[in-house]
Amino acid sequence: HLIRRRPRIAHFFLPHAYLLGGMAAIAAQVPIRVMSRRSLNVYKARHMGAWRMERRLHGHMTAILGNSRAVVRQLVEEEGCDPNCTHLIYNGVNLSDFRRGQDKQAARRELGLENATLVMTIVANLIPYKGHADLLEALAGIRAELPSGWVLLCAGRDDGCGDKLKRQAIDAGLDGQVHFLGQREDVARLYAAADIGLLCSHEEGFSNAIIEGMASGVPMIVTDVGGNAEAIRHGDTGIVVQPSDPRTLGAAIMALASSSPTQLREMGERARRRAEEDFSLETCVATYDRFYRQLLSQL
Image 1 (cartoon, rainbow, N blue to C red):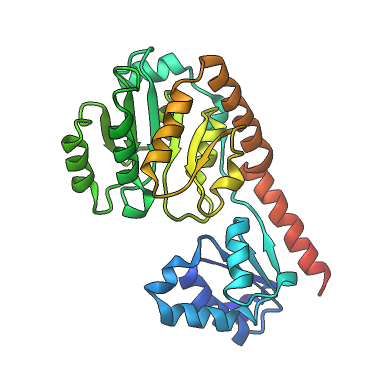
Image 2 (image 1 turned 45 degrees about the vertical axis):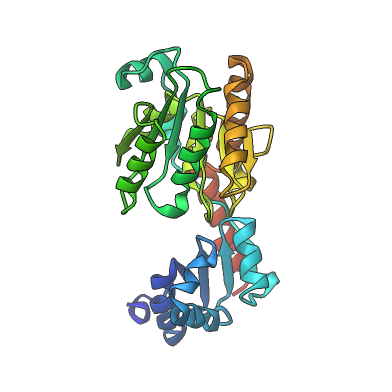
């Protein structure tokens, strides 16, 4: 295919595409070869052979991209990538559904929630590294201090730990307030109904769920992994906490839960503006366009 099409640029996203396409592009003598890393390299522990092959390919790339400063730093410091050829381009998300905005009361009515309820939302598949267990432990520790009737909406596909998390919620006496919603197509509605957004991961590259929450005008509490702290400005558009620390996570939830509606709204509006300016699909596409044109100008 590459020999027939003779592209000037071949760009590979994710390991499988990189391993197969990278070697093919070298063999086909594609003049510009680009690799994008979309996550931290924790996967290397499970796939050491593939990771070693990736490191060999790095030296044959014209440019290497990361989607957060944390990913770029790993590529340079741990994988020997040339700093002059390693660049940062953030994710871009189609924010059209979130831009329209949805009336909070209407969203809650559709979800069967009372207007006065403190609503928290986490959008993350049920995978151990997403930190749901930490969140449930944090909520169990502060439930006596939270406003009565609070609700946590958990949206995401069950990738194997759903039953364990549900048992944890029941054992902690949270099952009436923690709602596991499964995979959803109405994420914009879930964020529109929320007072607080959460992402408690132990690892990330750069989370689109955070961008979607920000674009919805929701202050986010996130863990300091990958690019999370690059998206959320601590104390300005949300709160950043250390991963795997339920006590600190609980304190952050209480800090936002105790804030006035005006404070939450202002924090959420700052988050919305940042998402629009830095993480929209339009911004991302324009950045890639400039990047490709610059590479082509060097041929």
